Image (cartoon, one colour):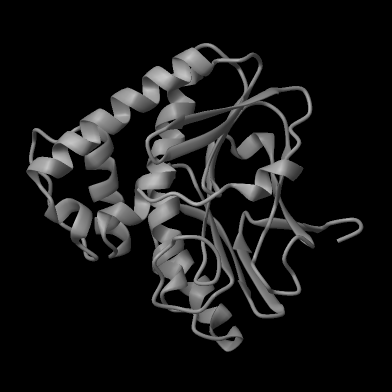
Length: 244
């Protein structure tokens, strides 16, 4: 649950929605909704963090393991969802924490807003009735900022989570500039991005990474950027960025 400055947020624009930020401890979210829901979002974040931190304090291996582990019946819902995602993808449960948080906050706010987008360190959960465009950042790849992912209204609610061996705090055993996963579940999308990124060590591994993504139940689509090459599968619809 580490923190990095969210400098990319300066260019984010979500037409028709009010955008605000919620920061609590290491959790730093940018949220877009039909109105400012800062108080509700702050309450959700505090409750989610308190439950997960208490569980980790009593079960430190949950935060330390790089492989799936079982959780007890008394684990909070967030921890159970993270453990399930870890089991499906073969990574540690904390690989899914950002995506899990994004979904939990979005769902919690959805009763107060018909449209909700929660961004948590580059991991998104999108709920609403409008097509959205997600710009793909990939560090020093020449494709960074030049390609966008179309998130149609038909596939929402949906998680869009990215893991990178070159940008941000993500732990990766691979070398991909960016692996972006679409899934209905935020924890699964985040964990799958890590799992796929682990097998991409060079541009020639993009096809292998896409096959890995397709093998994970619940993954709707994937995009992989490695150096100056890109590959996509499933429902991942790409579009060039004008001026990119």
